[in-house]
Length: 175
Image (cartoon, rainbow, N blue to C red):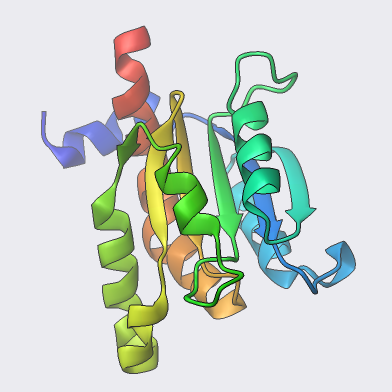
């Protein structure tokens, strides 16, 4: 079965439950335009939000949250996590390092495609993005920059188009 048939498959269009995380040392929940956009866009596409956290750029906080949310003991069913923030090159940007140590499988194509699409919008500054995606404990994880433009680009051009297909692929062995 090719990718078009997979996307048409009823299981690839399943309503998913997604946890949203914003990493920021300065933003408050009431000012989290990017986190709000992710939540509203997911809900508009028929998915549900299993939770939301705004946390500081801290490896231990992020790792503990991901392990908890993706664990079998977490109260709410979660199929995936979308993280925004902490993907740049400054000392405080720890999202990629934290996630690469957790991923069971990294989806290198996501970061490559994101940077390619981003290049079309912002030029060579796209090299500073360390957007990534992977699978951890049977859950899909996407990590994108925290700017609203980057969030819109990733959600509208990649994530919403592929999250169902990815879920189908990683969960079909469980059926």
